[in-house]
Every structure is written in C-alpha cells, then in structure tokens.
Length: 125
Image (cartoon, rainbow, N blue to C red; front, side, top):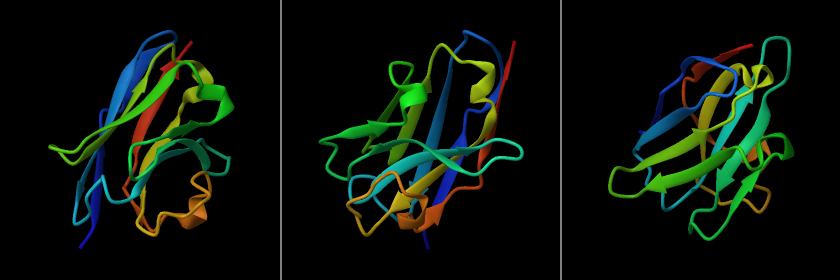
C-alpha cells in the first residue's frame, strides 16, 4: 500500500520561507517521478515541481523558478520542496504525488497515480 504524507505547511509572511516534506511508504522515491502540485481556492490543481525517478533532472513551473527547489533524500525516502521568497499568490494546498509509471510528461497531474492528503500553505502580505 502506497502512502504519501506531506508536512511542513503553515502561515508565513511574504518574503519568507517554508520547507515541505513528503514521506513515502510502499514506494521508493528513487523509483518513481515525484511531483508537487498545488490548488488554490476556486482554481484548478496546477503543477509546481517534479524530480525524475533517476534524479537526473528537475522541472518547475515558470512562476516558481528561482524561488522553489525540489530535492529528495533516499535514506529517508522523502521528497522536499524548499520554498523561498514566498508570495501571497503561492497560497494553496500543496500535494505530493508519485508517478510509478515514469511517464514522459512529468508536469501532467493525470500521469501521477498516488497522492498525499495535502498541506496548507498560507502567505500573508
């Protein structure tokens, strides 16, 4: 049984930082594409960042490039999202996801087959 558990969300002022963690069980983070998505109230879920199963590449949506960093720790079987220079528009529920099929298109939510429950990130202005 695959489980993804996010942690690290909270309330932060604009310009601040948070680090989200996604601890996996039932799947090894080094065997699947791992992604972060977010959903703001009234909006569709959107891609934020992903790391290839091999760790050879990472991908980011344009709005977070240079501010967010995705990484993983195989020993802890955990994926991280370091979020710096946060903006109010980053406010959303953030979800961790695993694509065990290692699809070519890493930014498409439809290719991810396991999801966490989400963690709230709120950035105040």
